Amino acid sequence: MELTFDDLWVRSLPGEQQVRPGSRQVHGMCYSRVVPTPVPQPRMLAWSKEAAELLDWQEWPEMAEVLGGNRLLPGMKPYAACYGGHQFGHWAGQLGDGRALTLGEVVNGRGQRWEVQLKGAGPTPYSRRADGRAVLRSSVREFLCSEAIFHLGIPTTRALALVGTGEGVMRDMFYDGRPADEPGAVVTRLAPTFVRFGSFEIFASRGEVEVLRQLTEFVMEHHYPECKGDIYAFYDEVCQRTARLMADWMRVGFVHGVMNTDNLSILGWTIDYGPYGWLDPYQRDFTPNTTDRNLRYCYVQQPRIGQWNLARLAEALLPLVKDEKPMEASLDAYLRTFEQSCRENMWAKLGLPVSSDPLLGDLLALLDEVEIDMTIFFRNLARVRELPGEGLPAPLLRAYYAEPQGEPLEKMRLWLLRYLGQERDLERMNRVNPSLIPRNYLVQEVIQRAEKGDDGAVQEMLEQLRHPYRERGDEDPLFQRRPEWARSAPGCSALSCSS
Image (cartoon, rainbow, N blue to C red):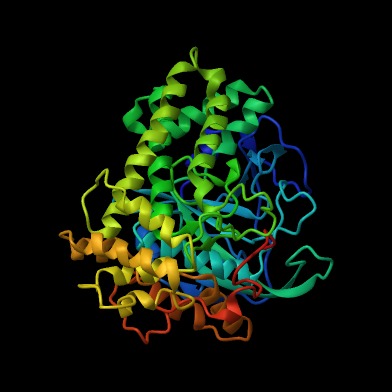
């Protein structure tokens, strides 16, 4: 099968052209040329046909060799990108692609350009003391969640393939001094660009203004042509996209887990699936990240952190502009756009037009009082037609982790009396309220099957995640509350950044 790769990034921006081993500080360069490190036994574990269609590709016999890092195709000029970032609110300096490398770019028949990136393909100059590899558990999580987020209708980088490597990778999963050998894997990721906020920060922090200018002009020309080279217009559009992304995350209960500035895409897309999680019970301060002890990146804080990160991006772009006031206005507009988008999304979940009625706020307060499954509650709300003489409608009872009693029960009954008296758009509700999300415990079950050699486990789950808004019956195993055993089980509730 003929595959044509381009190297626009390599041709257009300054970079280290000689492949050199070893970690180092890379100054004045947007990237370093690298080569993948071969693996012993690459085998294809999962393949996204929808992602492949973006490249006009079909799966072919040698694909595992290529996407496992053992073989380069003509036109591939692999590189790892240089960037920095604020991690948990503190400047971390140079970070970069420590275990990711871009093979090149494919231009499809529609003229769209997609970068093809391997994650877990070996060390790069940005690996510091790490091995550049990735374990199967984190690779399965990224593969499935990338595609799930896409099918939920939210902007995201894509996952093309998951390749097992046939070698072990040593990791200390919870950083508790108990490292263990785990199976390795490589994920193939796709995006028009993997530039993130930290890509601009690194050059601003070093006073490398000319490189910062070249990068900014490249991103505007190729990814924001509508801005016609106007940095203010470019920054404003990034703010708007990021605001809408935050509203989308809130709609489905997605918690990114590690919203450092190096983990926010300049496209306003979801990127870098590390210790992410989903709201099982609706819990405003839920974070899936064991290292996020101050709840900086918890569910309800995500919009505020999005704005904080955008402020850091503005600071990075200041050397290229004369006046910071337009950027301050864009940051203010970010908040207005988020609030409007979030209101629209959440009222749509109720099947009602946007209103100043406290109905929505009252419901969210009720959901936060006791353990109520967010996904099941909103999905089954469309099935409720009337309030029974006592208790709650059976479809809503399925969302409760414990039988509601006393004041919480009475308050919910009163809320339902107000709500059911209004005319709802039930079809719209079912378009925005998923019946299936890749809950951590479901993905962990897939990981355990894959680690035991079940090569079809990931593909089976992907097939289900392609249909997140499909109607599912009460007995469907994918439309259930989180089981009690998963409340505190490793990989099911809290995760670390280890991958």
